[in-house]
Length: 61
Ligand SMILES: [Zn+2]
Image (cartoon, rainbow, N blue to C red; front, side, top):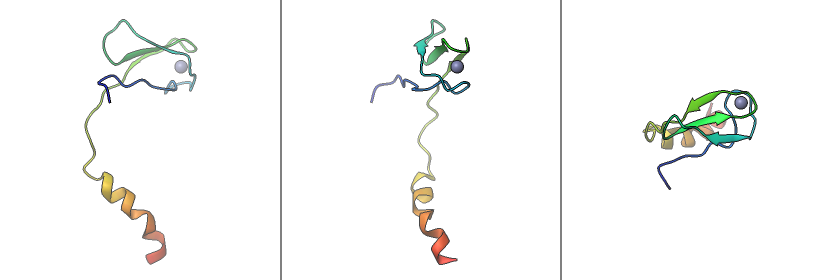
């Protein structure tokens, strides 16, 4: 997977009309609501496996 992650929807208005911003890498602009935002990958979650495993939690209690 490349370093750049492309958002499919605007996190503010949900529109799909996004374009890369001139602000720098990871920056996007929403044409619909005129908002600019930046996506940043923070890292993998250590609790990722645990949360997936907790699906059967309801049946045990
Ligand atoms: Zn928007």
